[in-house]
Length: 299
Length: 299
Image (tube, rainbow over all chains, first blue to last red):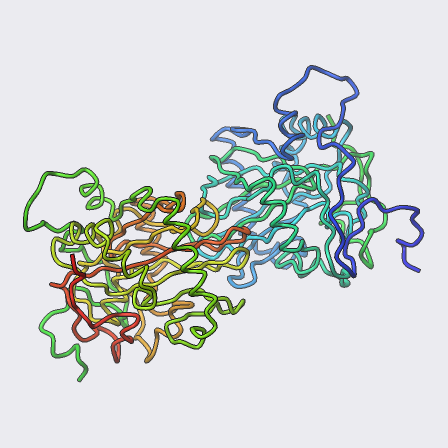
């Protein structure tokens, strides 16, 4: 008997043995706030599309400051052996540093900023905590991108996140051009949960952070979503932020240009949606990938 | 003593043992026509940028006709074993069919069309012949793209094309979106010849059509060109044509979208620039890749 068998219900079953039809999502992307407040066109668009963009969340001097901070972290030889540091398969360059708000006071401060945590509270209609934070560095020439996926599918299956009441912020520290591996999104896809095939192997995260093979939606499901909704791309100058719902289907192409991409990535989860046991994995992922400290981000 | 040693001069030495500085090109991209004629802004832009786009070269019904023709050819089981047919490494799908104007009367007619051969004559200032023709099919999800290269570098080294007096037409049969693997170009790069490192192995074309490893410019040279000129992308609806100079540096990213890309690709060379012995390869490539029939395309 596994942990799952004790549950009365799993709204979003995945990692299945047989193909299953997509599930219509029950929860909103933008949750009602306690205080109510005036209608907001930007929030309505986020609800409809599953993502929204905040241009110039950081000014140019702040972008410079955080680029320096990311450079300092990625060049820190002492961090290379740290499990929080993910290295690119082929080039051996640093690709991501997880739990970066614990490693960098400056990034910790940024996450507590009202522009950041404040917006997360507004979207999720509650206090929030940091489920995951990282900086990503996709080098020029060899950046390899990520295939289509829903983050919530993984967080539900492997981390035990009950519902899609989480939101990610990808804050660009370099210009996102249409052709250097920027995020592709299927607008509106957050309303559909796509169950994936295949049981989760033990310690799957060690491989999946580089090249995911389980938790991958079928081509048929991606094609249906893309034909229904189209595909859009997050482009914009350094300092702009993409906020996207936990269940928005997204991916990225490779980057053959000489122009690298770097961003700060933070996942906020509602404190009312704290993790339980994984829904479809033998054991939870480590806390630097999926925090089990549900302390709200202070105001 | 190789064939090269008998030459008094090679303007564009490549496949070298040691890194060499880029060479400033001597020849124009748009050659003077015998008849002269009025100044043409589109031709001036082609000269300056190394490429130009003709929107709606084909109308919608023509696009349909040629898509059907390409489907017929790629589904022809009898052609699968033909050396003119190149198959994708991982998926075993047809990626290109070479010398397609000989295999398809409809595509042969298209190439003779004044919209096509006529424009090639205008650009090259002479009668032209078909150096290479092919249809390309980049499937959805798994299209892998091509790294940066100058076609002329290969045609010079491996085919014996003396000078960059050739032009390619890439005619889109599907929409080129910003994110389904469309061609990236460095505008103005056609004025710089970038010598490449490494001797050409025998029968290099068998591998290079799938994944080129010799004749690849250095990252330093690509970075210099991209920083000087920027990068642009050929996007446009089905039926539009990109004309680009033989020496324009170009490449393409991968395609994770469900949307495939298909095009007809024709290289016209000036009859005054007919092939000689390869400048940097043990033997010429086969004639289906680099024709040695220099008969002008009839008017």
